[in-house]
Length: 186
Image (cartoon, rainbow, N blue to C red):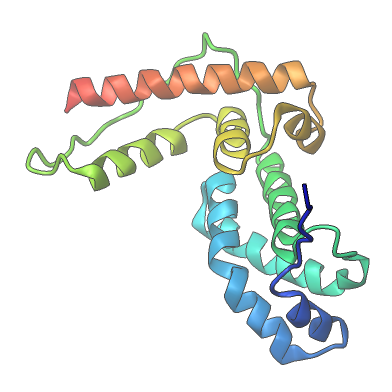
């Protein structure tokens, strides 16, 4: 079986950036800013913090571009920077791993009864995820939405793999509970 070589479609832009081309930096920013903002937003759960993380991440990426070896795509390298900076931002708010027994009441304003389409369901899930405690939300986001495994999450968050797995399990249970509560209140 023949193996195919993977090449980053944006490698030529990255090469221009390494040469100091400001237009190439702007091109990379345009290509990746929206998706990287969304990654940060899912982790920080705060618009202003996500904007700050985005700017800090691009500045770091351009400053440290000489360390980018091309073993992965520029996008995955940048995503790792965004995730690390987002986690640092959340840790600044004292990321806490919360036991399952700690329950909070989450107010639900109630949905518009006429709106039971897919958009409503997606928004409901987003709101439920946003209402999770930071520790749960970060692990759930990294595992489900960003595709990291528990070993990688453990390394990123400086926790054990078992803690990552238990936080993910608890996050799923809490999310299910929130979704059921939301459906009951609808």
